[in-house]
Image 1: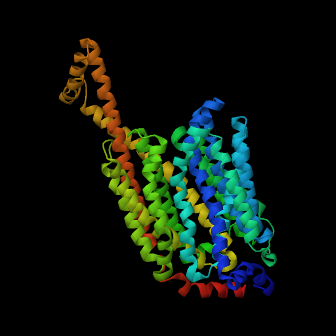
Image 2 (image 1 turned 180 degrees about the vertical axis):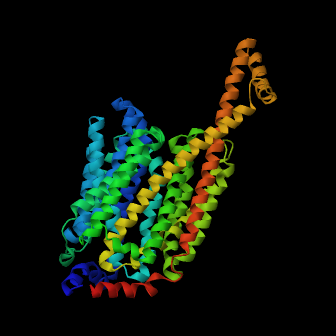
Image 3 (image 1 turned 30 degrees about the vertical axis):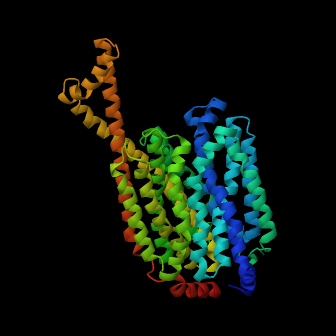
Length: 536
């Protein structure tokens, strides 16, 4: 790398060394933007029924409020590395905050469903760059030996935000309407933008790292990401073997092949494929992908169970998740500190085992489970998740040359986004299939002439007769009640199987965790990374 390139990408780092407090001010600034973007990702689902009522929309149409955001969010992420080299971190982060805030306001003013979906895409174009940019900025201003701790604090916004989102969204929607969940971002976005303008030092674009835009590579990658995420998000409702989903998977395969072909023929790649030859970075991607598949699916399952089967409303179910979220916030800096001290392998192994056990504990979850029975496992998750996040993110950032941290953070965020979407789809499919299997088995055991049916219905029938129902009406009522109980029992058993399946997925990642370094990455990788950067 040339001297001018070093000067370009070292502006943040030199400012940090001259003023050690600067790096922490950068951290506080990016935490505001990150928390705002992450909370928005979980706050919207609560308000979807109100939006359906206001716009007269059906479920398939209103889902595009979430799906459109998810697609635009994921597609923008790979661009952040190129944008960072073109306009610099400072400008990219400020523009992302402005676009996200403006999109939020426009969503709050939307006059129909198409306008809301369009404004959600604008919002996502800002939100998609906030995560990779903030992660890369932290990696530049903090020295390798402190990155784990810094990412631990930064990660508090990532893990606490989704837990607070449903509770906050339910409260705002109930008191001020669904538009308030978007308009609340306006003051936060203004404060975050003003802080970024005043606190972040002027960031010089990395002129010698500028390269032509890889339009063909980005086009194929965008089609691949869009088709894949659309297929996994719609597969359950449309049917996995339906022509639409089959066509989307074919498009996914073709576009991915086209992407690999284009990237192999150009040196100005939108995704730096050489990063995948880095053993530490590749191991982090594997662990992150499997963890996201199981974790996001588990986060999707638990609120669904407590609301649909245990009868909790949105605010109450959010409060059930709150203690675990607070535990996450407390232990995130500790997880980062451990990664700095002992390396990523052992914290990750402990975290994976604990997270797998967290999901396994719900194998006996039923409608009579106490609130404490729901909360207690989430506390274990709150302790174990930080061991899986900050140490491996810091390891990934420390294992690549400094000028590639923006690209590395983009790839890591894309893998987590795709993994989470696949996880939700996979566990939803397991839930549906296992529920149907249990329903069939129970229905075979409880027929109208079976002793099990007579035993289950007799008590209900006697109570109905005592209330004055005729014998025929009481018989019909008892039959309906037994059928509802069977359906509920099958659904509970389906949820239990899905949690066990998720636990198994997490344990698969243990093998990949052994590929992680057993020592702090900055001790055995950072010097070689700098040497690579200097040689270039």
